[in-house]
Amino acid sequence: MISIKHNELSAGVAFDNYTLSSEHTSDGRFINVYTVLGQLIHDLKYSDSSLDSQKKIINKVISIIDENFRKIDFLRLNNLILVPAPSTKQKDFSTVVELVKKMSEYFDIPFLNSFSKLTCIFAKRLPHGIEFSEDDFTWNGPMPNNTSICIVDDIYGEGKTLTALIRLIRKNANISPIYYLSIVKTRNHGMTQDGML
Image (tube, rainbow, N blue to C red; front, side):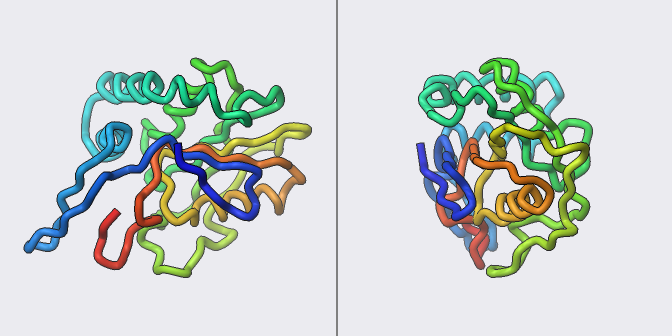
């Protein structure tokens, strides 16, 4: 497991790196060697597999993270709610939402699907040093009281989405503590100038 550091988080964890290595080819592409979890997340996000195949991939992810999930102290809090990070693409099957639904069911932790992304801007496409604006995300419905929130995402890069979501929570409610859980994290903290992960 890999610790995720952020000034506004009580704790943050990723289960593994996204890739083991990336090789830049002469035609400008990259050949990535993924970790096991990285390959599953990559397939889940970027392949056009059937809904049944996607659900099988989610079940594999849950079976791989099961043992380590149970070791994370903050995931055992009684008042914890899992909240999926919003998807940039509006589609019927949201990778993160479906992962969090399965986590909620499997580990018996409640979840709220309350974040929405209002723009189609991808975090990895934002120039280095540029953050999302306050208007890029919204929280749907009332903020929960007397709870701890764990924001869950599939891939942690530079933390731009995480920072924006924390700002949104802090602006609208006094929820503390806030935790973060990601299935994988990029080795180079997001997309670099040359596209490597």
